[in-house]
Length: 155
Image 1 (cartoon, rainbow, N blue to C red):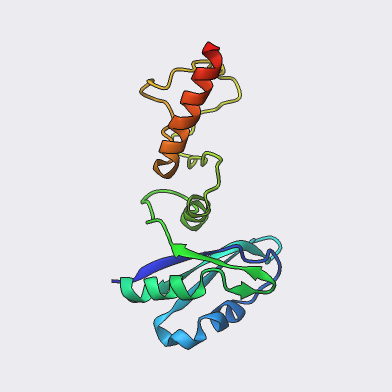
Image 2 (image 1 turned 60 degrees about the horizontal axis):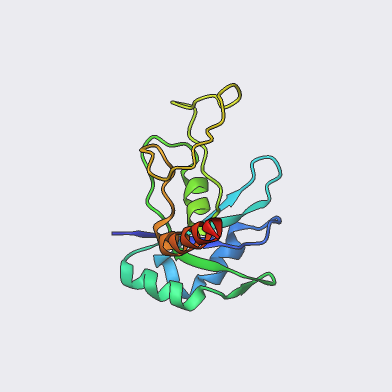
């Protein structure tokens, strides 16, 4: 089964796919690359993907190439999040999620509610059923911060 890897922190300039492929050239034909470009300018959007044959090869590539310099920037290589069916811009959403962008992702056009005329929610309760769930990687730190804030509020 093939494994997709996210390549981030690429320079936001005109980059040719062959330049990205050249980084992984010693891995042979087992690696295919996809560079994500801006449609209007043709410049790199700062990320891309590579596909490898198996998990072992993916782990080797992550270990070997994560932090390697490419055009004076250290690239970030990690396993890409799986694609979701029915969503637009799958590569963009996977990249945002992988890079840890803190902003909530926009929904596709289907089912999107207009926020322009809706009242702002002022509820501070974290027990609401429709509350945003924190990233599980940061949940422990978030709980510590909440406890510290609660302790300050009582003082």
